[in-house]
Length: 71
Image (cartoon, rainbow, N blue to C red; front, side, top):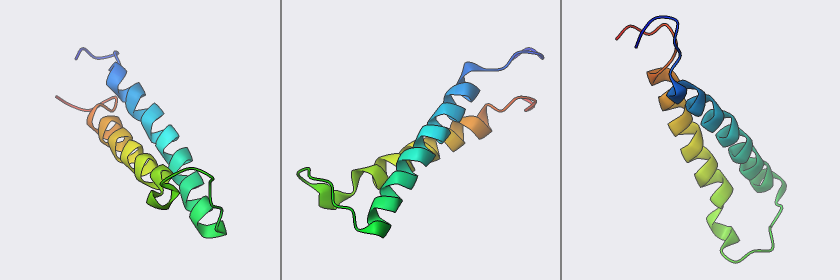
């Protein structure tokens, strides 16, 4: 990568991190307050799992393709 250019994967990582944190936070809030959504399989806590997955993937891409990284 040439200097002065930022990889698109860095921005994708930032977006995944933000969305993951928001979804994960909502899922944890629902667990903490005892809010039970009226959907089938609500006991699987999908927002916690998917938010955590997005958060981890976003952090991976954000760190791996951060600006100023050598190589």
